[in-house]
Length: 313
Image (tube, rainbow, N blue to C red; front, side, top):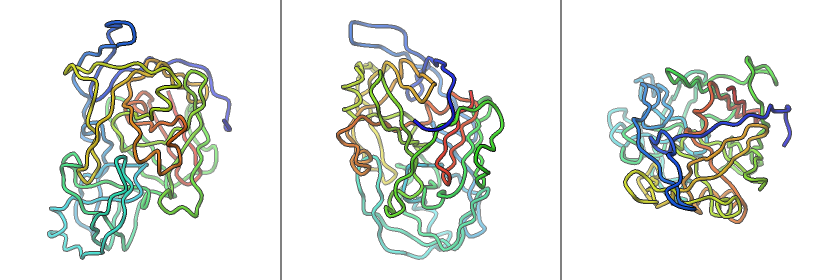
């Protein structure tokens, strides 16, 4: 992996959709987890990172930040009140599938350093948006810098990129790789090199995922174990912004290394989803790094222009 040397440290991971910790082995190869109150602030709702967004100078509306979505989305019930005209259909690449969806056109969309004009927004129901007003994808966030502040109060700043290396604090800097400019559907997405039990893997940075998701290739090669959820099951449902769903298996990944940072006993969801296929990662170990793991750090900087990820413990 390129980038600055990283100090070796180990973080014991806790949490999978509100799980506070792992309580030991129930039997060989089977781990049982216990439930705990979920962490919520006005800016982090149900594990999503929220920013206030103005649309056509009206709002603010509560939008999730999704660094792995190729299109931005607005809740269907807002369209009429904002008088947003129809703009045809597009293909939205979600975790679950490539989905055809209707769009509308907004004259202006803004939050922080984002000030975009004449924008197409996918229209979806609130069910797939966890009740939020919408989400911001890389079609609007590409070229910007996301600063995620965790701790007592979660805050997300959408800012302009700084000069290379101009970051405060003792952050661990990892170089990220964005897809080629010729692939419009990948515009602005970041992928870094990592490893799990010495198995090389690709990790997509996904601020729109509550939980970290891995494919079956990584689960198999890294020795992931089944994880029993509080309701006694070992599967969980994942939902796309359009409301389409799929099932994923809950498992425990022994280790995930991001440079010199080692995350141990990592609860994950496992499935061979559309996102991995569209990135060409269907048959090689890969993961979507979600808010559950990003939230272990005090500050996370995702520079979508320079392809840089900074983790500040």
